[in-house]
Length: 460
Ligand SMILES: Nc1nc2c(ncn2[C@@H]2O[C@H](COP(=O)(O)OP(=O)(O)OP(=O)(O)O)[C@@H](O)[C@H]2O)c(=O)[nH]1
Ligand SMILES: [Mg+2]
Image 1 (cartoon, rainbow, N blue to C red):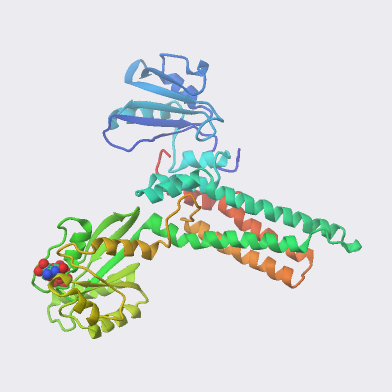
Image 2: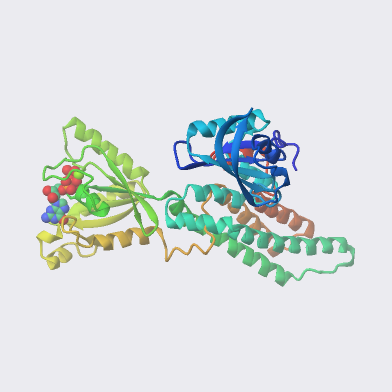
């Protein structure tokens, strides 16, 4: 047990279920005194004499006064979530009752847990590595099937396993190099240089793949924001409603209907898209409110991950499209061109008019080709299928450390190319191992840990 961490010996208590009224509420304790503290409040049975992984019905009483009838679950360390003795008290779901139980536990010697402290203990006791602990937080906040599956994959150790393999290979590599150093006088090469190249090559392949997965990981974890922009009356609000399948934004034939931005979230194929309907961009407007709206549209273009430029195929010309593209390109944004109101024209005419541009033609009003637009949106952010069985990096901390791993692998390879001495190679290898260990938490400092776990909820 790391005794340099303050409060480590304490037995901690917290409500593990959400605050508020519910059917039941679960209060969780962890620490050396977890069982004895609850035992003091639970006269029905002697919990100290019960075996692990059992449940017990009875009353929580303090000073002879009943607080609640509860179910107590016992998990004796190390076979528990935290690795310590854990007791869970399932009581009735009244916040008042729950507080009384928690306060009684505190009076018997427990202290309130900090955010994430249960999981932090699990990490410090070696039940989870840091990537798994972080995946627990990701699973709790997951809101799509893709983010749920990615988090579960990492809780099960998917990412850890890859890092472990990488680490073992490097250690093997460095052991050979150091052996060579010991015999440097004799001018022998124990380590087969061809094997080295192979090993570094495959390690680099792995880190590259992980680095590349971060784009998708970010999409899975945080979703994608899409600004729908275009001239007044192009049908932007109608499109928002069509994508949402409800009448969210006001639609009218009056140009300049949308004054402020309207944002809604939709889930397409497990990815969350935050759609932003904006005020139409008019070149010359004197209306103050409209001008503010247009300025906001500019801001939204800059802030979004994707931009849909929507136009009326009947009134706009290819030259108008060019102007719009130039405006979007100024902001370096990805964009999709969507031609609307094709129901009012002959399809062939439309295709000829805009030949040479990659445009999705739709009718927002008649819901024509809306599914194609959805597919395109997903295809923009997901190359190929989302295979959540692969390890996908979703965490910026991991991404930054992986970049360093990749850099040190490049240095090792350059070192091999330049035939630098074994002791210098060993330095680069150590640096690489350092960054891998930073991801898994084998090397960590208290501040980093506190920061990571503080993002959890209390009781987890
Ligand atoms: N025929 C036809 N009319 C459409 C289509 N989409 C939208 N409209 C009509 O075009 C008009 C403008 O639609 P909106 O969705 O309000 O347009 P907007 O781009 O949000 O306009 P502003 O908010 O003023 O910038 C409304 O009368 C819609 O019914 C379409 O696909 N076909
Ligand atoms: Mg509108």
